[in-house]
Structures are given as C-alpha cells and as structure tokens.
Image (cartoon, rainbow, N blue to C red; front, side, top):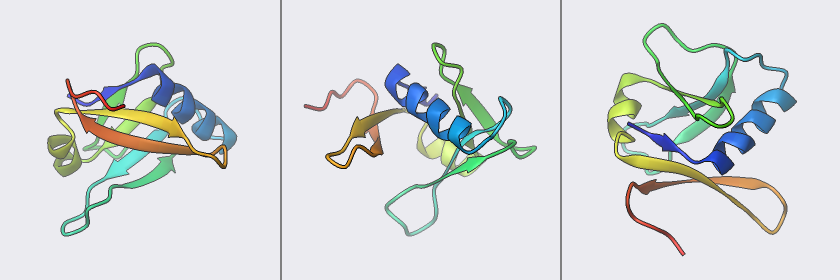
Length: 99
C-alpha cells in the first residue's frame, strides 16, 4: 500500500485546506497510460471506486483509482521544498532512501 510521509501529509493538508476542501477531500493522484508523470489535483470527495489512503499523523488523504493504486502500491509519497518555497511531491520505492 502507498506510504505517505508525515511531511507529505502536512503539505497535503495545507493544500487541501487552502482550497477550502473539507475533511472528506484529499489529493487525487492519477497515472495515465504512456505518461511518465503522475497527475495530481485536489478533490472534494473520492469517487465511489477510489482507494483512500490516510496518513496517520495528519489525517491527510490521497485518493487513488484502481490502476493508480496498483502502480503506487510499493511506493512512498514524500515532499521536498524547492528554492521558490513551493512543494514538490516525490514518489520513491519503499525501502530506498534518497539523499
């Protein structure tokens, strides 16, 4: 199952709150065929078939369709601050650390 770091959870909460989305909403992550990057957007509610992954510390939610859920099953969602003070989400294999 997708692992969400507490740092990513905090960033998701800030993003969702800044867009006025309630506690049922979250960050929607979608994989598209033949595209290397994942699409991310804020959603007010999960779709009926979505898998919802919740980060324990912050309660932040990530909404995944079934195809994307399979793709990120063994991954960790983290966040890195860039020079412009904007957040950039990263997805890495679980058990592999990045420096």
